[in-house]
Image: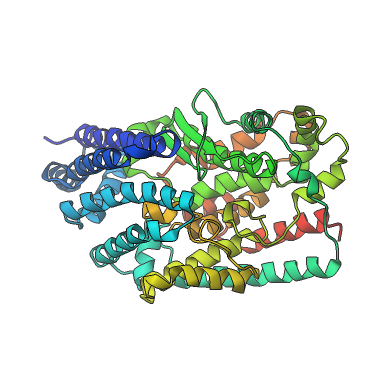
Length: 498
């Protein structure tokens, strides 16, 4: 007789394979020798093949079919794992094995050639690989499609259940309108905060010391994590006790690493605090990208851009980098910290203009999959969108189409999760401050009430609960972009002293 334990054992094996793949991916972006990419691609393809065979093979199908027919051995966890494993089986199993393995190999190669293209500042090095990735996805979409209305909806749905172009168009229109009004108001004020002090030299070690101490005060555990250097910052969670973060450094722009580390530590906090009962089922319980990004952005923006946080943290920063900021008063620091202006690089954008970077990528991806644009036009389309939305001329590939790693990883449909993450984070904050006094908490030096609230209401669920349900249960309403717009208005009205 097939029991719940048989399914859990099978899914645990899949989870261990996923952990090996994650470790390989982390190593490829943090320490793998430059010439090792072709060997690593073979390893990644092998792991992908084994994972595919396990998650879509006859053995898994037998487990699912039998337990669906007789679920008498299933408890609540077993029911959840059965449901998610079936979804995983149906989605992945629709792709022929040889195509799945070939696609995974291309993804591994693509990240290597993306890094080479960045180094040479030449999109043409990466171009054949991104076009192959898009080709595979266009081949897979009809296999995945059920009731989605557009091809791009199929990809969106893989990162955020139920997300559609129709919903995003409506949300992004509201965000665009609100951002435009606030930016015009700030421009008309004539107030231009001084942020020149942000470009004073602060050593990598000083930045690391302060940023990691701040991340730990917010609850990130170095006993369950680590910080490494990389080209494009990311967090990789192998398991609940191993959530690794990365960053890049600029000794003449310390804000980038400080906010970047807070951001990635937010991802790490989520992973380190998922309920242990889900440990062996991680492979079929992926955390929604929007809810994941809401927690990294909660760290970076709701906390890392807030006055309450910096009133407490600025003296610590001054002490760490002294005498660099000794002459900068708090009000000057905070206004400069919040200065808003268009930037070419998404990860260096201020929170007010950041959603515009996401909308640009969303419109490009939508054009690729719904409008079938000529892929040769991608760099020109990128340049045109940056001119339209941010008024900027893109001077080269490095600051343009090569800046993000996501396409090299096949993550088309992911970018909207960043924007949704901003909106979710603001809505969570609006609920949180009804019962928590942020000012008093940061003044006390004990940030644990914020940590505990997030763990209890969000983190512990991992990927077991859909993000829309978490948002509605915690805040009492569905997604409402107005919370984010109100928070931005309050933030910049204060910083610009309007």
